[in-house]
Length: 280
Image 1 (tube, rainbow, N blue to C red):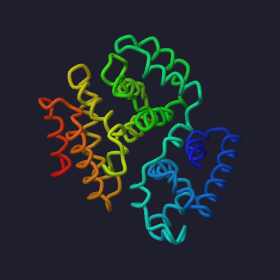
Image 2: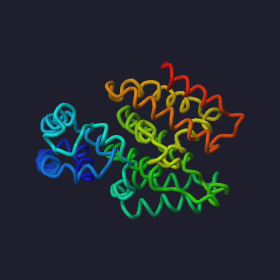
Image 3: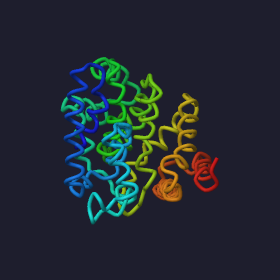
Image 4: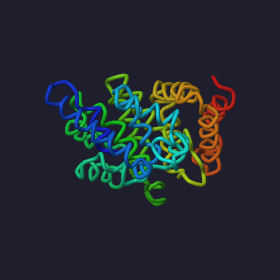
């Protein structure tokens, strides 16, 4: 289901692709309606994927049940919050990457020295990110880096290329507004309903580090990400704005507790905290 929901977004244009997409839609709808509790195991990323196909009539009807009549899908399903509070397993986040993509990303985050990454990034971009259809791949790569690539403390304290640098580069390769918005959502997605008891600091660390390290060399990236955070808190799903605000607040507190940023550099944290508590 996870893979097909992503493929549906990319299958458009020709009559052959439209016919294939309809088969994929029918397949996903049948599984989601008949085995919803099994699909629930995907976690919060199921909501993210369903948002991308929400305008397709069959999924529009499914969304109405998810929001207004959740027990029509399963007596055990209490509503969308149940999904959003469930962390997505690594195995789902990894399934959209080919083995070669995964190997190259793991190589860059474990063997390549920071400052020497350009030729590897250029190769990766030529191989996988150069076509219009590859725009939607950015969000898959960012979710994979945040949720699956968790370097050891030894690597984190070394001069190996950090995750935030790869994500910052991926953000700059987005050439459409939709791809850029989806990439930013992928980066912040675990912040929105973050719980220290269920979620990992490693999932939320890259976003704060991208903003921090981009402030001087690429201030537009930091400003764009802050603006996105301003907008996503009230607009992600207005009935759950309080939960989203609390999730971001919990993320920031956890970042401070784990000393992700040096203490002199907490102005960014305070700015985000202001957004979180007061709105902006």
